[in-house]
Image 1: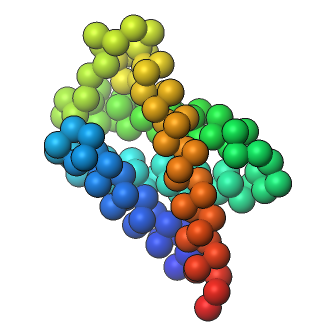
Image 2: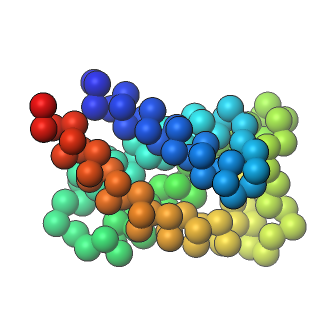
Length: 126
């Protein structure tokens, strides 16, 4: 349980930092999304042990795009918080996800998945 809480916290803080660097601001909902996203990447890495990083990054792209869609539907559509809107981007789905950001999730996965591996080793050293 401690492992999963730690992974969630790292993802939450890490994604918030990425948003601050990328957009100059973030929203509390992105802390939640970052934690969930990193947990899913961490679990996918475990499940896909022995597979190439490329395969894991493709899975990460799908997982993170799914997280973005679900959070977008809840945060932007249901709660009407208007945290982001991709409706002007080509190929967008309901203004919540788009190919450009899916590609960025794919690229980000190449860096984040190995970070999860380092974190896992450190957590299991004790």
